[in-house]
Length: 400
Image 1: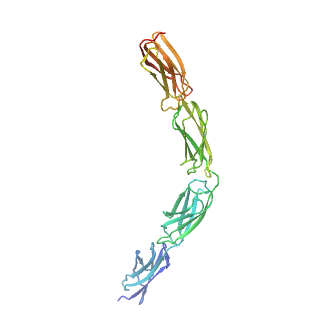
Image 2: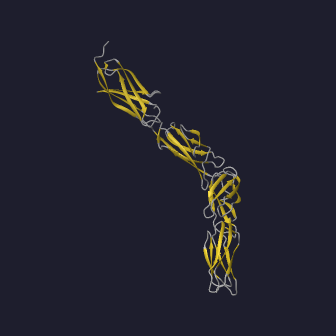
Image 3: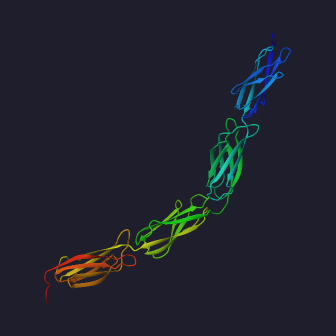
């Protein structure tokens, strides 16, 4: 007849930490002579079911991956020919594991506006194993710092900033903890070296070449040289050579400054854009050449009266204007020519400040006359004219 048994079960370590393997040992005690043989089945609540083979009345198995909490372990001896089965129980407690958090930054030191990547690494303290989850809050002191919470991935969290001001910054990385791992904190420092980052200034023209009187917008774009980033502030001074030029200072907005003028004289102008620099960005400058060509002019002609009586005074008026996109008022002279048959007379008249030229009090015999008005052009406007204007004179001139 088979003898009864008693099964005792123990766990070590107990308590264990998350990720730590636990050794379960069953000892089968016979209530009689002999040594039990066979197998023991270990059932772990919330964990695995394991089987061990008795040797000398004992057997051990290893349980891994147990979650935080209390696990009931039931060890059932399955009996053999000489011994009956029996069961023993115990409890295994798994607690949260301690962690360490470290924080680094790269590059260190950096320059103003340069992107800096902060990396926090959360590591379980042995004998715990596994990969912590949750979040890390980076707390960075000083100008451009603040509090930034980032998720853990593979036990690491990263943060990129390009806003840090010059000086030393304390960096604290606070791990939040999760169901299996306790919170922890790591500290470090990061230095932003003084001195502005180099820049490049690029000037552009809205239209080149342009014509006299045409509005031209000059734009200067200021960009940080790699690896620096950010948006430069301050001013740009446009220095323009030649007629209508000068020095014009404009504010930067979004890294750009603009200046518009329609006063440049004809010819070639050197345009220099000088960026002033600011606390974080160094000054820089660059030039371009702006070409201003003659503007096109148009000339119109009228007379009063037309038709006119023979010998009565006739006034001829020429109007000279700029043709878009040119602008301004032409100067110079207009040559009026009155022609009929063998009769021809030319008279030169100045263009006034409003663009008009006048040939007044012309008394002509009866007939049909061809009248032309030719504008000579000037330093800024090309020549133009009217060649087929008809003046009619009727009747007979009075005699003394």
